[in-house]
Each structure stands twice: as structure tokens, then as C-alpha cells.
Image (cartoon, rainbow, N blue to C red; front, side, top):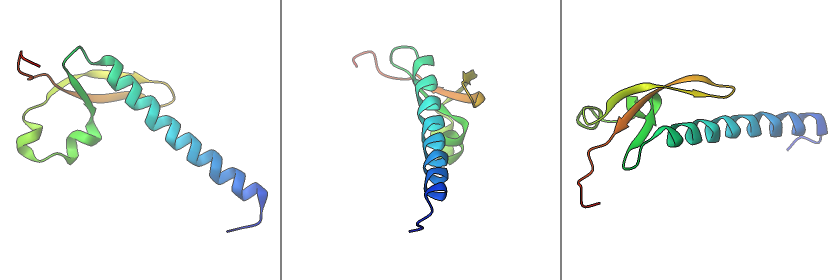
Length: 82
């Protein structure tokens, strides 16, 4: 651990900014979903196996503050009983 308070503050600000962007993106994606849908970012979509990717449909991009437009994918194949 460094004893430089300027360094500690810089690291904390970078960490807070990164976490804030992730929370902002998650909130924007979640709020764009209709009831019964799951909306994920392109980053999540890319990490899914091919069979799971085929279950998602491309959605219109979602706007997120300080991030810009997020390419989004939606899953809405829930059974009616849920």
C-alpha cells in the first residue's frame, strides 16, 4: 500500500467511476426491458455459447449517460405460466 494520499484518491476515483458506469449500464438495460424480458449488453452476448446467443434477438441500442449507446440483446421466451 502506498502512503501517498493523492495516489489513493486517484485509485478510488477511478474505481468509483468504473463501478458507476457498470451500474448505470445495468440500470439502463434493465429499464429498457418489458415485463418478462431479459436485456443484456453486447459484451454479455459475446460471452454466451452459440446456442444461447441464438435465443436472443438484437434490440435497439440503449442510451446510457457517460457511456453512449449500448448494443443490446433481448430474451423474451418465457412460458406464459411464469
